[in-house]
Amino acid sequence: MNILVIDDDEASRLLLSRILSKKLSCEVYEAKNGLEGLSILDKLSPDLVILDVLMPLMDGNEVLELIRSDSVHAAMPVVIMSALSDKVKIFNIMKLGVADYLLKPLQSDAVQKRLSNVIAKIQTHRQAKAKHGSAFGAMDSGKPRLLLVDNDINFRTFFFTLFDGRFEIIDSETSAEGLQLFINHQPTIVCVSEKLRFMSEHKLAEK
Image (cartoon, rainbow, N blue to C red):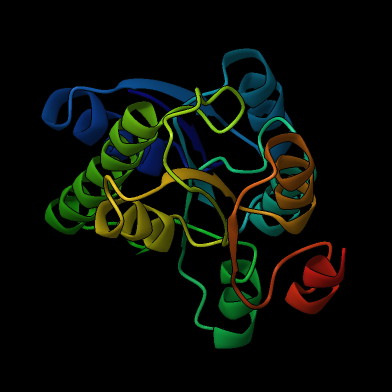
């Protein structure tokens, strides 16, 4: 699994790199700021981004907003990390959709456990999608086709597990992508969560 770490703190990057490469057998790429991180993201399309909130040039919130607004990387799993004690700022970042949150200063054992869980969930989600067919190229299985639009990757993974074998499931993290999938695939059932980006659940239902 390829993972991009974006953090201006060299010590944090070193710790994460050691945990990810030696303990979790991942390929790690590093960026010292948000601009460099976006450039690497565009070139490599990693499986997961670990993003610090407080950085020069472009902070983590700005980087995450750009990732979520990009059609190619909108569904990219992102783990944020920060020493921020401001709950409002953290909540605003979490609303953009993150896989987990790491508190600084980073503690090796805790970081390894949390990242291991995130990676396992990503792999489970991919296996489920591979089994049921890609969202953009699913073959007709004869099962009812269901579209799930939800910005929480953990819930989407749980949903795949829960309805395994009953539906041909396609999923989206944003309302805009969800509407495009509806047009392309004409599902029988649509499940829509609250607090979606771009369009509300009510507007999406109307469309």
